[in-house]
Amino acid sequence: MALIDTIMAVFHMLFAGIWVGGTLFFVGIILPAARAGQMSTDGLQWIAGRFTTVTTASILFLLITGGHLAGNFYTFGSLASTGRGHLVLSMVVLWVILSGLLQVGLRRLRRELGSRTAKVAVEQNLPLFFTAGAVALALLVVAGLL
Image 1 (cartoon, rainbow, N blue to C red):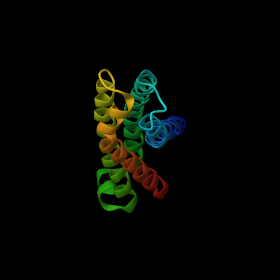
Image 2 (tube, rainbow, N blue to C red; image 1 turned 90 degrees about the vertical axis):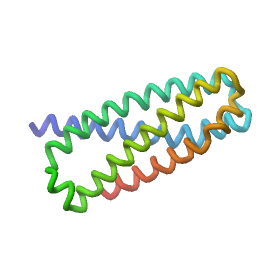
Image 3 (cartoon, one colour; image 1 turned 45 degrees about the vertical axis):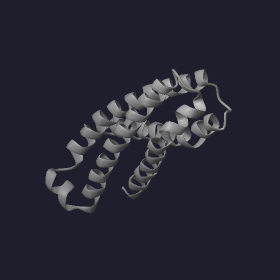
């Protein structure tokens, strides 16, 4: 059983790192380049499509691996009454928020890229993505505290 737990923990950390790192890269590098007119609409559409795939895969893998890890290492009582449990619950809440922000933001961005320039499409969705970036940073802080 310890081998399965180790494998789940490795995949959990791998997909969490890819997803959160990808979010920060998208918000901090890709969107500013598109906003400055340094990226074509087609290029941003392609990158947003790939990031949508990464986001969806990460959400599913984190749900599966995180559920396994939480089920094996925590009880309802320990989640509700310990500091580590509170951090795990905080991480779950932040995970849900980031999932929603990215799914909505990427869907809107990709839809608007069909009829607008990359710069205009990014401007319309910037608040969602800045919020997603802040949530991603909060996830890193909570993960560090765990």
